Image 1 (cartoon, one colour):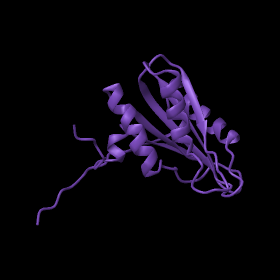
Image 2 (tube, rainbow, N blue to C red):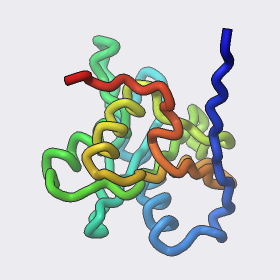
Image 3 (spheres, rainbow, N blue to C red):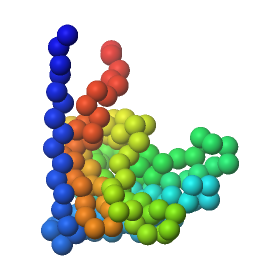
Image 4 (cartoon, rainbow, N blue to C red):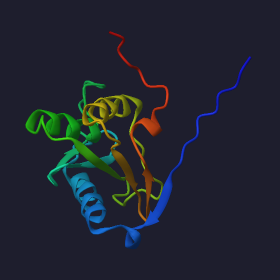
Length: 158
């Protein structure tokens, strides 16, 4: 048997350490949490994607009584960006969440597997890494790419 190690390099930054573009993106994700429709979980997630031309597209989770018919914030944002701006590459995504108490979560909220796979498709289309910023109450955890969060991703074989 052979062991394969898959390294994961994450950075942790305080909000004051972010550059202006990243701060704006994190704030957009935080603001998007206010537009979540989450009457069942009371877990409000917002996502904001920065495109190569500087456009920011936001999304929020949308729940439905017919679970699992809802949609995560990350896919909500990425599908809107992909349909509205199909020729413009994704550069970064910021994700924020508010817990049942209405406050930003103390720990970062990472995208689910389905969202990672969907975002990876757009990263592949971009031909360049899409940075992932996980915004919590006190800091931001930054992954260099979607692929770094999904090392054994599904790929179609032509």
